[in-house]
Length: 349
Ligand SMILES: CSC[C@H]1O[C@H](OP(=O)(O)O)[C@H](O)[C@@H]1O
Image (cartoon, rainbow, N blue to C red):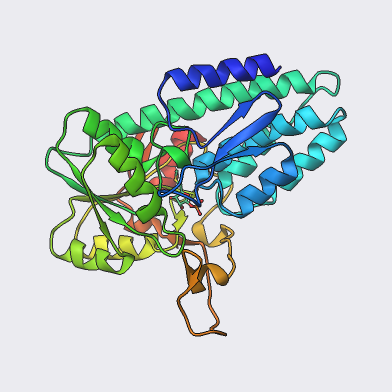
């Protein structure tokens, strides 16, 4: 089994991808996203318990990468467990780590359902290989679909980090669109929201765009309204953690505010997603669980306190953008326009 996994990773390496996670023999390796952009640190993960901790600590994060973490976690679990019940317990632990992005749960369910107790190890590896290929193909296809929305000279606003390290290694969701437009020769630039408190934008989106040679400017999250009002933005493209049946979007905290300002200034607002993040079983955004993270992550910046000792803080890690504020949903099957529920069910149902 490990030979098949090593062959998969070798193939990925030859495609010059920026991988957030991969298997190596009997272990899984993560690029530690909490250390970027100043240090490139790789973590070796040998157990599902260690992987669950890494997911909870956001050492690996980003809905697409979380989906792959579920798949690689299932691989680890299949190495460590010889019976299906113990294997399923490990999968349940993975699924419980972060609730908002639907990808982790979907992948765990996909890999862990209808397994044959006598050959589940082989089945897991084959499903892992299929999922990695599928997620990568999604990024290439949604990138192509979304790039058609971008014109020469455009400035695109992003939020959080929705790039290769949040996905399968090409460009995740939003950066797959931007990377493809750049590859097509369009002279674009990106306005990057820093995305407090984890700073996905300042630390990871900026790092990825620099590697791609794409011009960008960093702003703090509270500057987006100014930029949108002053006509500095041609379109907004954000990632996605879950798209509900009616088109409501769960994405990084702050997305809703950018969508309101874009709507108020008639700037098109798109989310880049894939069928793996569209959840037709969730009727609307108000039924999507929003992860509440430790207040400590708001009260510190790079480990240094930034508030009066004893200050209380609140950290909803996501918000819900109502579909009425969304111009279109970029997917591997093209750009979906309103009426979202009708079109999402028709195309992905
Ligand atoms: C490929 S879209 C990634 C998506 O996930 C991020 O959340 P987190 O960093 O907390 O995992 C953010 O919502 C991005 O849009």
